[in-house]
Every structure is written in C-alpha cells, then in structure tokens.
Image (cartoon, rainbow, N blue to C red; front, top):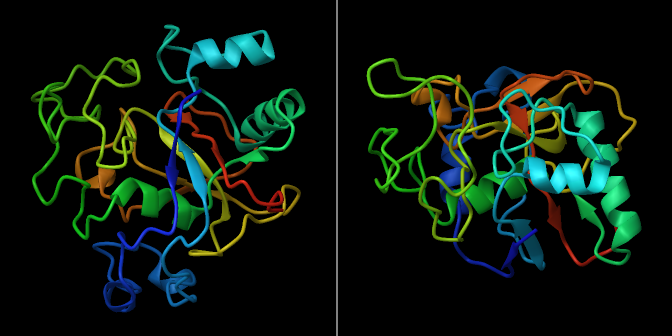
Length: 240
C-alpha cells in the first residue's frame, strides 16, 4: 500500500465555513441528526492516508480470498462490510505492528478528500464526467456518458492535490464514525452498535451524490458491490 502524509495542514474547511455549513444540506446532509455537533478544526497531527482504496490484490494477499463481484487485481475490493474491513485491518496490524492502521474518521476522510477545496468536489464546482483524462473525471452512474457495469481500476482518474485517488466515485468508503456522531474527533469503538458512515459515492451514485459533503450509512454487517474502504494510520496510539 502507498500512503501520503497529511500533517499540521492549514488547508481544508475553515472554522467560518464549517459554521455556515453545519445545517446546509448542500454540504452536510444530516441536519436533523446531529449536524450542529462540534467542529474538530484542522488536522493538527501526523496522518497517513492510503492513496487508493484497498485493491483486490492487496486483500487477496492478506486475507487469502477475493469476495469481489467485479474481478481485477487493481480494482477496489468489494463487497466488504464494516466488520470485514476491521478484520482486514486487524490482520494488517499484526503483520506491521506499530503503525496502528485503521479506518479514517468521517472528518479525516472529508478533510483529506477536499485537499483544501471548499466546493462540492475537490476540483471545484464543475459536474463530474466519466472521461478518464479529465480533471473532473470519476466513476459514477450517468446513463448518457458512463459504462455502468461496475468498478474501474484504482488510479483510473486524476488524483486530488493530496495525491489521493477515487475520493469521488468507484466505491463508497467506510469510515470508523457512527452516523450519529458527525465530525467526531476519534473513531467510535469497534463494538459500538449503530450504522457507520460511508463517504465518496460509487459507480451506482449519480454526480450529485459524489459531492464531498454527501453522507451515506449502512449497518456494520452490510455488504454491497459498491462499497469498499481506504486505510489510514496516524502514528499515534491506536484510536478506539
């Protein structure tokens, strides 16, 4: 896996912008369920974020199987539940002790995906297209321009300014945050009940659903062919 470091960054959503968007459905779509929770501010600790969603080759190497519908070594692994992702990460931590791999919090995911953008997408306000060479390219659901037959290999579209691929589209990505705890600074405990938040949209999501502020959530045992995950580590004590 390849990771990029996001540390003591001043980019991302500012306090003023965050205050305005807490109950603005254009950005944050849970105003009735905790949209006014405390804003955590900038990421002021070392955070390494996986440059891509976990691939089938990476999953196969560690777990010894491949559950994916849309086969391809460099395609993102799917369909994996939150619990499946946690099992992968637990095994990864056994093989590389000290790094404390985990899923990102919801806020870490959005902060890294935005890479300084205050707009709907990391590239700005322009609607996404399926064209791979385009700055605003992504794999999503659009009958007029997309081949809606499944995932694409990771790195098929341009990376954001933090060198992260597929933060829009391809597969939804699990976070370690409960749906009721937006902007929580730490991961909710693995055994905590309730649905977990997913971010980023997928190959079955329309262009509007790919917006950086859009939220989705599933129960921790749910598996879907448009759900995968990305791994991070903080270099700190494991956050539980």
